[in-house]
Image (cartoon, rainbow, N blue to C red; front, side, top):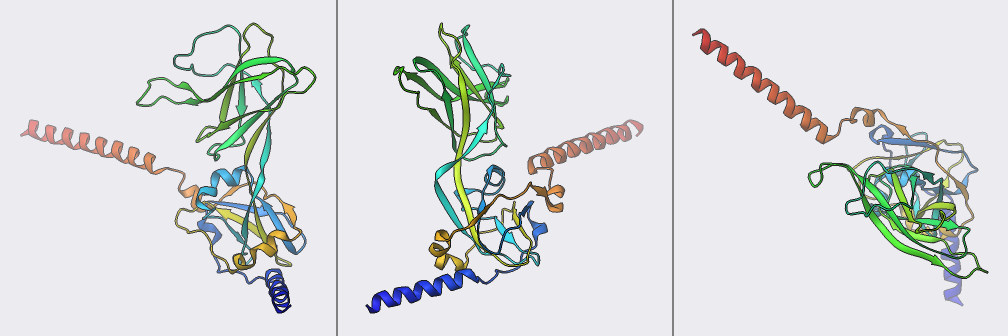
Length: 306
């Protein structure tokens, strides 16, 4: 009986603490690369969607979203906990019939391939899946998913690199075919290329294509009367450690208002760092080379005069 009563008291204390969490330490939002407004909602539990932009442009799930912060109007941190959902985030993609801008090395030229461009929401997305649906009932097709790789030291020309391939078939005319799911690691690509070997058949009807991304939410308690922003885009931060994590289960179980952050805004610090380190060193090398050439030329002129 005492154990039950103690558990109830602890639960009540955790709920009270979670509903009135202490704000965290202040942080300057200008030091982050990206700011995003969090839409207004009632005070209380909020479930903030980590959308494709946040997945791609923050330090992401592999680093436990180490650079992501939620700040109030006075730049104080609003503590949050991360929720990983089992169901993936599904993003609809409209397949576009198109010819790829590069060829695949060793690919045998065939007359009846159908190729689709799949435009992703943005580049630098984490490992994900592509789900394809068809209305056909009896079919067999060879399906490939590829990325265009730019010219590099391995190849003088851009090339189409296959990242997933399989045979998709269905023979039960009385049942709809299950969607085909292909694993994809887009990397810095902003589009994928879907190729279907139709054989001697007409083109397989593609009814829907969806990008399946890992699904996360940031759970927090919204304070009353304060505008909030989500910020990310820093490499010098460790993952936040909030006391709220001690009662995270109460927050994860609470009924919450689900909101999605508004569009990204680059901060002044991000605009100042638009030149990448590689570009900086390339420009510096060119400047040094030009300077050396001028010095050699002036030295040669002086020696000729003497």
